[in-house]
Image (cartoon, rainbow, N blue to C red; front, top):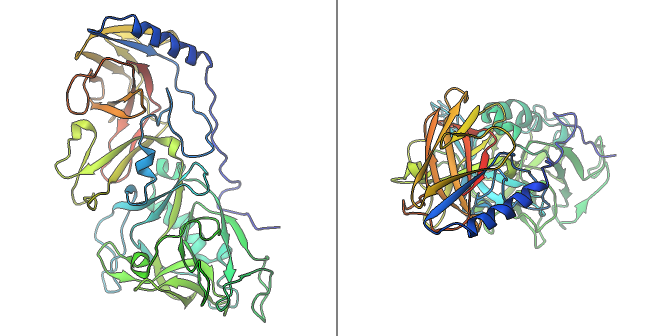
Length: 450
């Protein structure tokens, strides 16, 4: 029996939401209504039922009514791109002061899905902190499931780096830890792979985790030698870099440093595999204080909006300005700040064009091409701003806007401020809490067809 205990009593179950089947019929009716409308007008069909969220076998595509409709998951699963999630007071050097003065947003590599699991895996861009693998050098101290670093990552570290809504969005995969013969590269099984000590369970080890270390295939021979970001151990799937330079870890300050993997040494039960400051795999005593470069998985269906970070950003179009907290992306890549679900927020009651959106009936508002509709909220959570996105029939966001706590002018314009072409769009409105360093937060959006 594998040890599947964790900081949570049970693994997070997949979220499955049900909706009203008649929404599809309403959508068909709205299309017919649009076809019957003169081209000089756009029809806003306000559908009051909230979006049904379907379970996905892989990364969601976003359909009518899904809160994540329009989010560009092809960009968010591209390992060349990065996303900010959480905030932390980064470790910066081995000299006093060890840490940066202030917390700052945490930048992650977007590694994409693992085995089509429908989750977004993130691997920290920087080495965030230093910690020993285990507090003692006793035999068996490289047993990852009960190591000090496993416990610290899933308690103190997690609580310090993630706000509650960000933590709520973390997935809890089964993390597998294997041992490989340092000479032959063969995977080792059993409870006594090293003479003189018996581990609490047979290799490979498995344990649920919200935050975990990468793993390493460390051997003198074999085609799969390297660093891996996956929760499973299925080389060559999930290999991170193709050379030592790509595996080298640095603090945010730019200093290269050694960092831990979760893989135990096959030579000594008091050693674990690490990545040295030149990107090579090596082994270190578990009592050493070394870098921590973690991996997490997040639930993509909790993402409402992904704001691209740019120099001279157009914030009116949902972009985030490069500043001391948010770095400009490398040439040809993108960095994002997310808006994620916070079910404690609310827009209260909404009206559009003076028409109440309460109830379960479909309402129609007519607006001239290139015109606007006044959206008003009563009872929205204090400190939030009414925010909207416009999604076209191809599933791409073509418009964005943000108003005040009580009002929003919805313009039938695209991101270039040109009139939207006549056609079918879906508009989502939510109350958003803008945060300086952690992810923005939003309530479950209301949506209507434009």
